[in-house]
Each structure stands twice: as C-alpha cells, then as structure tokens.
Image (cartoon, rainbow, N blue to C red; front, side, top):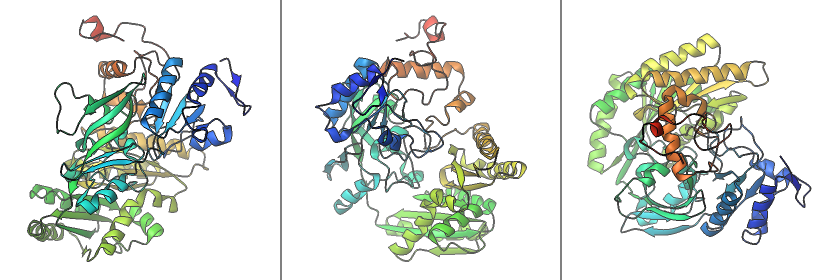
Length: 498
C-alpha cells in the first residue's frame, strides 16, 4: 500500500492521512492520536491474546464529532472500530491495522433521568455502575450488571448485549434499551426506538443491540430503570460438589422461585477468589452458590425459607445470610473478582463464554472435568447457574511450549459441548474476533449469508468493525473478497445483494 508520512514521522496510508485531515479542526487536538507509541496503548481490549495497532485513534467529545469521524471514514473507505472502556472479552473492539479506532470514553454524560417514566438517557462512554449511582437517589437502578460494571461502558454493553448476575430475573441489555441515537456507517444520525415500550415497523433497535459494532455506532441510549426492591437477601451456600449445587439450583427454579441471581463457583474458582480478595467462602467447599432474592419483604421472606430448605435437602453443609451491606458486598466481591483473581493461580487463562439449557449443567460440568483430566489443562468454573451461562476459565502457562494451543483446544471443545446441548457459543461476551471461527459450527452457509445481507443493508462498504462475528465475509467486499457466485437468496429472487 502507498504510504505517506505524518508530522510524527509515522508512515500512514493516503486514506488515513485524508481522514486525519478531515477531523482536524473538528476534534480537539488531544483527541487525535497518531504517535506510534501512544497508538499501541489501544492495541487490544480485555482479550489481550489478540493485538493490532490502529492506524489512527480519535476520541470525540460528542455525537456530532463522532458522526464527522464516521463520515470521513465513509468518504475514504477507511474501516473503523468503536471502543468504550475496552473491557470486552471476545476481541470485539480489536482495532483494524489500517483503520480508525473511535474511542467513546469522553462521551460520559448522563443527559437525563426521567423518574416518572423510569428512563435514563446516557452517552455511550457512561460507566454501567454510574447509571445506578445516578438513579438510586430517585429510588431506581439499572439492572444489567456485568462483572466489570465498575469500569465497562453502556455503549459496549449495547454492542455486546451484555448480561450479568441479575439477568436471570431482569434480562439482558436488550431488555432494558428502549431507544438510541445511531450513527450509520455513512455518518448519518438516525433515531431508533424511543421512550415508548415499542415502536411500529421492523425492530431495527433490536438488530443493533448485540450487533457488536458491525452495523454502526450508538451515541445516545435510552435505558429502562428498575425500582429499588423493598428488601434484598444474599445467601452464600456451600456444597461438597458441583452436582449438589446444580441440583439445588434446579430445585429452586422448579419450585417457581426466580431469584435475582444464582451464581456458582467451583473449588478452583473459590481458591482463586480467596487468594485475591479473602472473601471467606466456606472451608472445604467443592462449590458455592451465591443466591440473591429481592422484592417485597413478605415475598422475600417466603422465598428465603423455601430456598434454605431446598439447599439443605440437596446437600448444602453451610448457609450464610449476609447480615448487612458490608457482608453482602464481600460475598459479591468474591464472585465478581473471580475472572481477575484467576491470575493468582495461573499466569495465563482464557475466559470462555457459552450458554446451555440449565438442565444440562451436571452433564456439561462432568464433561468439562473429563476434558480437563484428559488434556492436563486446568479449568475453573464460575458462572450464572440460574440461566446456564457458563464462564469456564481455561488455565495455562504461555511460557510452556504447546500450552496455549492445548488450552485453545479445550476451550473450543467446551463450545462444542454447548452447541451439542442446544446452547450457544456466547452467552453475553459476544463473538468478536475470538469466536468468529466457531460460527459455522452453529450456523450453515445460508444462515451466515442471510446475516451478511442484514449487515450489508446497514453497512454497504463493510467498514464498521470489519473482521468480527463472521468467519468468511462474502457479500460486502471485505477481505478476502466478494463471494464469487450469486447468493442463494438472490438466485431465488428473495433478496438483493447490496
């Protein structure tokens, strides 16, 4: 590719140089990064196995500036990737080497709290937990709560349709997004949805939430707020085995109780959490459940009695009810620190994300244990037991030859298990770069081509986060090129290729 030199001495393509020129004077100088060393600080998101240095980083301060960047990219055919806090775990915000990384971290305004409507309007860089902090004085909170909620952004949550511990009862991000201002891949800003619960016509907002930035960028989101419960009870329950913990989980759900959360950690995950945050989980536990009940006090009291009984009948040897907010926070600290805590017991690890029907938990956990024993690769399990959303942590030492490959093989086998049990290769972390190669294991070519048709309708040039989600682009001119033969749906006269 022909290159030119920036004032910094870094060679860039004429297209990148043109985009840089177009945004100068619109974006403050501090928000345009061309220095090679500084660019490298953005070379990965939370999945550090993949690293690509972007050609240019732009940090807009408002929606108008962001739209200007996208229009410049569209005019010069330059790919771009949106990034919030960079906490994603599937490489969804991995930069493009010849593209622009659009960082929304300075768009952190909570522009409106509508108490009467139970709505908040926020910019994409707003931190998840900050929405709850802003709404709490009004008597409300924001329900989706990824483990990284103290640092992850709403824009990233929307892109990945993030979940969290309390999604068992309250649902994922898509269940809490009512509207958005959306910048198309051509730089136009359009409203999607609104304050009302539903809008007529095609559910374009539903298509955008969870699209992992492949359709465009959301610059403002209207989210639903949930009334603070009258009472919350958090219970830590110790079991000797994961089988017992799984049986207790199924018994609770079968009894008609829907806790706000049921989280499970196995012995290895407990060991890591104890080493990191001294959460004081039950000694000798082969598994723990963190169960949270919320709602009206009378209802919570009845559910608590039943949950206590069901756990005891399924083998729990210790139950500990948090007596105050400090103890509740310590219980959750152990669970929410588990991912990072694994670094205390292993130099490297893969955070996998798959989902299965809850009833398949015992069988899948047994098979994961067998995979671990057969391969010699340790696997720690910490997950949302209530809805079958698994987060196996595959441990390895990259300094040992072949260890990373063995871990990757086990990781892939776990995803195969999820598909085999009619689950999915992702529960809440997205497909991103990391799992795009697994998509053909879930979908046939026609399924994937149909998804590409949707993408092409939003982004004809395929410049919005290219190379993510789809393993082999075919219709939009992405590298490695266009599909040579006609699409089956086009041949059948059912669709047009853009």
